[in-house]
Image 1: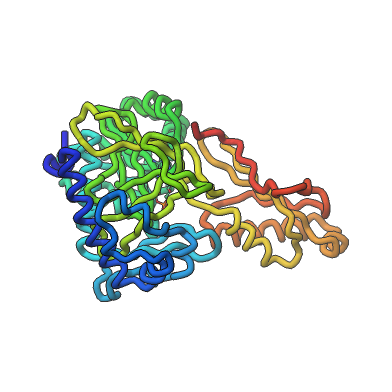
Image 2 (image 1 turned 135 degrees about the vertical axis):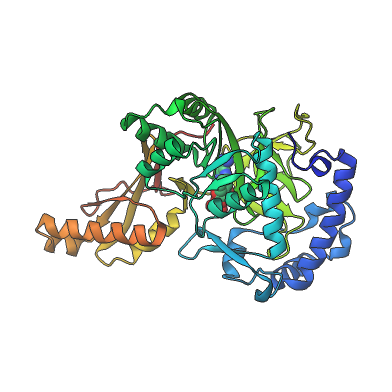
Length: 437
Ligand code: DLL
């Protein structure tokens, strides 16, 4: 099934003509309304009029997370605040989040694209959707919510957490569709089992999972445990939120990128050069229709590959493979994006600590775990003759991490000079999860 038959099946030529028309408009608008773009285009000597073909896009400079940070909080907005109806945010590389804004029309477009995602997954207005993505600044909750309403389905805005209650609702309300992170789906399955619930006999039939990397093996496991068809959804706050790309029930191999609204490129993350279509590299997106927050050549840092073969579902939009890694050090822990630099910034504020630390990420059962080992200073160590003192410092740091980053970490203070010193690049993060391909 296809939600927007006309736009999702546009022949390539018509699609590219539409992209070019929209690209010229967005480049012109970004240049004249956002100071950052004017400065960055001027620096490279490019004028909006130089964009005459889709190939000319690669002449434009990239936009990075650092650029968003430099223009924090609203400096990248292309409309006055009076036209902004919604703000969302995602993790920045240090303390401050990346803020995004939406006009009425942006929310409308987003809802349409999310409705496309649901239909691609075989969802209809008769479905009941259990939306366990977090509501709040994270785009998952409200993004999925508006799309489900646009389709006309019934939404249960359960949000994240409170797992036992979720199991109850899954039993009693009989939702047919579940939306959450793939790791939370497994967590729910496990909790359900522990409560003696036969999770495979619930009414659920479809799951729409994303916001963090997952593998084919995880798909099989989720499908078996919940007796559903599990599909992949991709997105990022900067570009819109969930619904930038969606796997279809017919293809089940790669996610269609809604190319009438976004142009995708793949680049070599080291050189920034465009890669031949189909090669594995970093995804770069340009938004074609966003009003409040247009992004030109935004470097996602997500590593994937484009799938060029036509899909049996009839959609002409190109597909992207599963996200296979990141070209930066961002971690996604229980669905929360975290940069090691954010943890470092918190640790450096604590005067009893030395700047030597290690972050260990693992998975116990279906839950990501985060442990931070950090050295205490010599002087603190000499004074802290009681375990109580160390434990209270551990708790304080743990609270700071939870308050600032929204995740629970196990903090382990270690003696001065016990963590391994680097002989080059410090190996700060040990990720033992091996989720990615
Ligand atoms: O995670 C938006 C979203 C919500 C997508 C719900 C899907 C479902 P951010 O918090 O800005 O936005 O995080 C974006 O998450 O750059 C990827 O690294 C990662 N990511 C998102 N979807 C997938 C996926 C939302 N399907 C970052 N597979 C992105 C792997 C994903 N990684």
